[in-house]
Length: 366
Image (cartoon, rainbow, N blue to C red; front, side, top):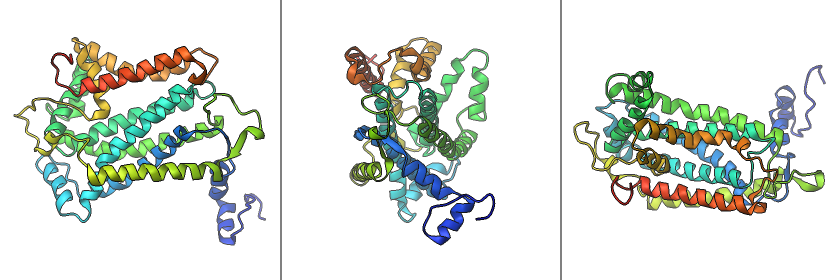
C-alpha cells in the first residue's frame, strides 16, 4: 500500500480503492455499524432518526417547491395555487412539505421531552443538549418564515404580529423591525428576504445536526436507566439491532404521515390562509401554527408587551441552562418520583397553554 493511504477492510475492489483515499465507508461502518450502543433503548430513542428523515423530506420537497414559487406579493399566492393545480404532483409535494413541518415539530417535541425525562442533558452531554436546543430555535425561525410564504391572510398578519414583537426591545427594537421588514411595513422586501432565509436555514440546521450527531458519538447515548454502560457486556453494535428498530419506527411514522397527507392535509392548517393577503382587512382572530401556540399564549397572558416578549423567549432559552439547574446525581426520572410529578405538571401546562393560545383573547381563555 502506498504511504499515507488508509488501510481499508472493504471487500469490493472499487469501493476499497475509494475508501483507501477517502475513508467514508470506514467512517460510516464505525459510526453506524459497530458503534456500541446501550442494549436497553426503548422506542422513544427512535425519534432522533425520525427527525433526520423528516429533515431530508423537508429539504427535498422545499427545493422542488422553490422551482415554482414566486417571492413577490403580487404573485406569491397565485404561484402556490398554480403549484397545487397545474404542476405535476405539485399538490402532493406541497402537502408533504406543509404537513411535514407539523410532523417535524411533533417528532422533535417528543425527542426533547424524552431527553428531559431521561436526563439526557446531564454531564457529559451538556453540549449535545445545547446543540439540540439550537436546532429547535433554527427550526422555529425556519417554520415561521415558511408560514409567511403562501401569502394568505394568516401569513401576512402572522408576520405583522411576530415581527412587531421585536419593537418591544428598548433602543434597538425599531431598527430590528425595519431590518426584518426591509421597509416600513410587511411588504415585498419582507417576503423576498423571508424566502431567501427560509431556503438557507434548513442547510444551517443540517450543519448543526452534524455537530449534534458528532457530539452524541463522542459521549455515547444515554439510556432509560440513566446508567452509563460499564463495558462490552452492556452494549450491542448499532447495526443490525438499532437499524432494524429504527426502520420499524420509520415505516410506522411514514404510514401516519401518509394518512395525514392523503386524508386530512388541511387538518393542521388555518382556513384563513386560503384567502389572499389583504393589508386592509385584519382577520377576526390571528393565530400562529399549532406548534407556536404555547409561546403565543405566554405572550398574550402578560399585559406588558416587553414583559410578554421576555417571558416567551425565556421559556425556550431556559432550556440551555437545564443541565446546571438540575443538580440531582440521578439521571432518569424513572427513579425520581418527585421530579416525575413536576415533569407531568409541566407537560400538562404545555398542553393547556397550547389550547389557550389557539382560542380568542377573551374570557375564560385570558
